Image 1 (cartoon, rainbow, N blue to C red):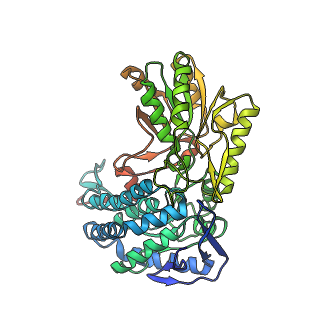
Image 2 (cartoon, one colour):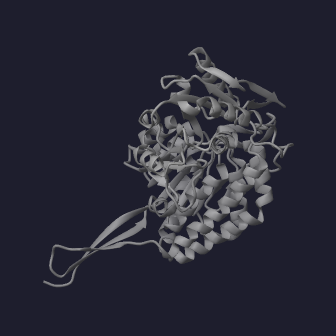
Image 3 (cartoon, helix red, strand yellow):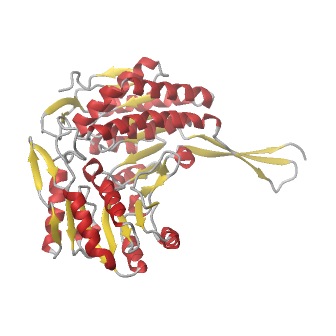
Length: 480
């Protein structure tokens, strides 16, 4: 059990709220970790107003001085890494090695975004008018609301806070109700840095109350949300009332296409890694596998053996595992229902296919399903669990059509040793990202973005930073 009750962080003050009490549960064993009280809308408004005042001063500070604060935040995270890892393992069910990677990447992300202080660029544009120059500046967008998911809760703090701050914005964070303590601990360590008052605020509560209020507030200039399509759509509806900018990373249904010339062992292991990470609860996890018929049997046999050898369990007591529990029983039931629907539609579960109750946690076996087709629910709906359905194909055109026949469009992958095939597939697959012969995991300096229902805008790199800025055109006439 965590030792301190969660408090919101508003205008550099820790606040004890008195709203609805929400429990923080360890998904690995179902035990109570802590609780918090939902912020009142008045308190949320106080956070917004403090952020609004802070932003006016913050944007006037040179970017290189803002970077100093980001580096200090990164240092604080490094100094407290072991404690943060323990928090993530307990409240999210992440295995220790993955939690360690998340914490390290969070610190590194602050360092990376700090490096952009001297790289924010504008443009000089030729005018049609004599004796006139046109300057195009990139300027802060204002007050940002960052609404976080539960699957990478600590890293997503950095992904929203770091670019917002280096660009000259202030921010209000609302963590997921499932994973709120790591955000509270974040505020405890940054409180020691004497950041400008109101620059970073953290409020707590449900999406339908606190999240909705943030999304519809006229003093919020941008909403950055990571989560489900359904919630993203609701945020857009609220944001539309004020024509507020939205940046959305939503669901995924990543296809992996395995060609007949692929290295079968390599493909099977890479796909396994890209499926069981975080119990399959990642938006860019491989969600469906398309395998060319000439290697279908061999690949299916190899993948099944690889998945059968995956160890899973309680990450609080076992470090020799590849994944832990589902975040809650609701997530487990969703996976169970999709696997049952596949069986009812004629698919065959060849390994796994069942839930496991370990110490009252919600776990699902690593699962491979064959004889699937494009119209099955398990191929069309996001699974978000350690399950791999396989569809066979004859020609590349067929596989590309299958991959693109989807509501989502975040991450995709191709396994082939033919560079011509790889390049053609990469050009024709309509997804935000395509991985060739590797796992589905992005890096800081690229641009993590989706198409269709996978989102609007993106994160990381130069383009991710510029999501948090707007342009200001200045026309200067210096003569007749």
